[in-house]
Image (tube, rainbow, N blue to C red; front, side):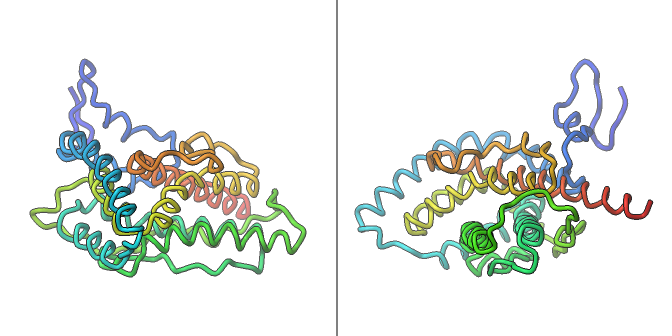
Length: 292
């Protein structure tokens, strides 16, 4: 038996998470990947998630019924985001909090990258997405993130139509939007910060369904399938398509059921990490070629 960090290696009983930690097939930031794996080894991900998931899906159906009975008048995004921020500060693991906040930065950088190359000189008007601590999500950050994606698509394609242009390969790719480091503050490490990312998402999703309007919730869930659209834009600009194999949220013209939104949100996070990591690799490759 030998050791790899704090994980024992036994050829007769290999640890699946150790194999995934050592695998380098995905262009994934090492620190972010370590956070994801450490978080999914938590007791809450192993035991609590299986109990929470079916209950959360039942609560989504109940939220729909409440919206119908109240004539869809419930709309409390500020309360929703205060509850999310409270949970992140008091209950969610440091690893999960870093992944949540990091996701906003990566998504914003990817959209800027596409705009910089698809429509040079024009950038869609979007809400800033640079949270550094859990409290920063209180400003309706999750809702603004969803709105940004659709506003980006509408404004970008309107500008392409105005120019009579399409998204295609560019001779020179501008990678200035893609950053190697994400600046975050130290995450809370209280005695109750024990809930992993996936379990937290499954708990938050019924709150989303209840405290947002039905239109806002549907749009948020529908945005997950735009992973395919954003991935295709990046592929057409760079001429590289390998990252498309890691996109599981597909076919935005035929929406999925909202009941599996929690799991699909995890896939959305993975797709974003892989695409950003892929663009970082291309940026480093371009820098080496220019230095040669």
